[in-house]
Length: 425
Image (cartoon, rainbow, N blue to C red; front, side):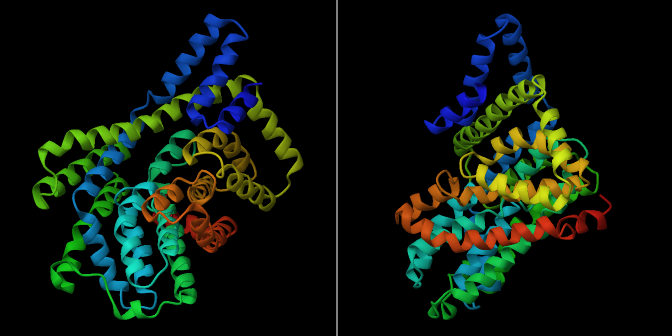
């Protein structure tokens, strides 16, 4: 009955956290109410009472500060100097600007919003259709949560045992770059607009040198944050605090695009975004306790280990399951619900836990560009205003490219685990 309540809640448009809470309320009302009320409340509190979880609001705040500091134009100018004169130049700049932005915000939705406002009208002006411009912006923004630093990676590492944040950070680098390469190959092979090759976005300060210098500081942030974690100097939570300090220095002291009066608005926006994630984490923590209380993970694990005799079959089933779930559930919520059940099964079948983590995260991030609930689709359509039907038609080939990359990293584990192993993780 609790599962039915969650499904019905989602079908009527209820947020996932509230749907789970409704199911928990039903559970509390069908038994020893004081006992269940106490347990559910305790589990929800325990779900967010974690020092490492502080990294989430801090990374969100750092991303907001970096977006407000005016780095968008600098990142675009930097990417334009490198890729702007190639065939399908503006589309390539769009893709690789997302790669750079991935090291700043770690959020696909934030990348879509920040880059879409610049690229969609600019690409239309240079001969691309507005629908294609919106589609490539949304599709390339999926790279954001895969390349470190990444909020989904931190949440995944806190959800399971046997995998570390630095290992997952490094494991996401190659898949993220691989996705950018495949998207680049696709647009260079299929885009029919030729005249943009001779036209380029204006480079800041009118020179290649200033554009390259302007890109150095944004590129330093992921190196600074991830490098300090890999060297063992700081924990991911402390690195997130350093990222906020870095963003403040850049935005207020160096670029001077952030005024002290802007901070309350930026902090309020970061707190709202953080609250959405933390409420989901709290609700799912209580739901996971309920599943464990009813021995659902044990039953499912025993059934899979009895009936699934190969890693290939299991991984293929996981890919299909998460692609389907990603149509209807927000990625972090789906991760928190399903990963505690599937991770032990994967380990039992001999799947590398780091590899499995990146496969899950990559899979769920594709859900951000799939209808009916893809958040990046909605953001891109809100900027482009081309109609969801045209946008979906334009993004289908890009979705196929991303699924192809997903299959590669799923069934060629070395693309994921080679770099972490090389670095000793």
